[in-house]
Length: 398
Image: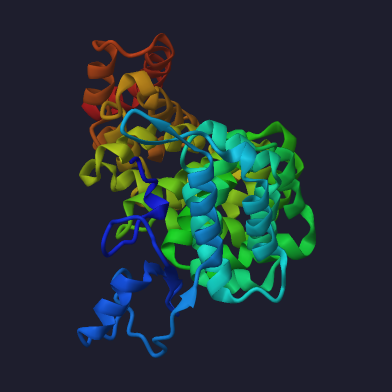
């Protein structure tokens, strides 16, 4: 029998016979958890949280789903093979929706419901599309940004998991519910006060909002929120969590793709944040190297504004960091082109910056780039930069 992971007890790994839920929100088969507690254990086996309340609450929702699974399974050979039951699970899906909508639903009920939705939404694109059609994408957004229960960290994490799973199949116009002031305030609150996992997931959501044509007005509203950009800039410098900094740099770059957001981003530290991010690229995982090209492209856009150049000139590490990136980022990601382009923008206006770039070793990097398989655009910018630097070199020689 092919048993979905959702229907297995995490202790016995067998199909639930009598699913019950602990105060931690985790569900186990009654026989297994009673045996665990009977041995004198006082913690939840999965979360290892200490149990101040050892009562076992029947998980009727999960039991109902298992019953539906049996009804929609067909005999094939010697065992049961699960057929896609989504179209015949209207009653179960209605129960899941009711659990999230009812203000009288307990926290435990909401948690177990969200865990089921998370599993269902990660099964297949067909399942995702069916859940979206049934209204779960909008419902999860409501849980996150309008329902008071969203202040519970585990509820927020699970709801975000479901939202991100459903994004590929969803009508992103639904995200415009965040244009409502109370919902936008809740998003900023979660981004500001939540744990790193939630912040990382929200960064992925912000990236989607900024990239979608249907949510451009929302993107501009986010760009006008100074606190949003402050948090993102702080997060992209998160050295202790590479996944969080990667998500933050993608969110910052996406928001800055809108010209109207760039000046605010610069004022809130985006130039310094991107430079700090790039400075760490050399000792970071390969994933950061892949994102470095995007960070450089955004930096070049920001340096197109005078305020961006001024911020760059005040950063003592900026020129040396850019010089290092001239021939480090893989050429197929156009990182070298944007590193050279950024240097070209700041060197045009300042002899001091030109000397600093020469002292940092830019000449060797440019010559290597010109001999490489880099793009024509990168080489054009490199030649233009060399043309700017040659008079400075001649003066130094004389």
